[in-house]
Length: 149
View (cartoon, rainbow, N blue to C red):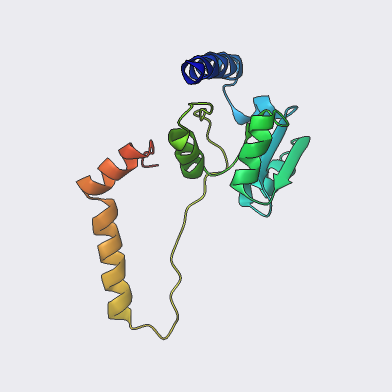
């Protein structure tokens, strides 16, 4: 009974928090005055500093950011969307929700040595394109709440 009641209480508190945060938070700039957590040395930390976010605390890991959020030390965690989505989805108490805010879009690439044969580079590029243009890739993105940009 205690577990059921605590779960019920947590879901109500979570709903209220999401409604309070999500109601008027249409972009990242609405968090400029709030205490935010991010991972130390990340591109997000640099971006928040460059865009004059006032209360940014950088923690050693995403787990530390989660602990600060849970303790109420920060209003939100700003970091990579796939990792935050995973954190929210793996939280069995549904305490966390990821708001659909996008900022600081980053694209990734592979670097190859100059000594790598051109035909091998071409084959790798073709296989990567085949993979990212496939239906399986679309399904994978959907499973993690992502979409092609």
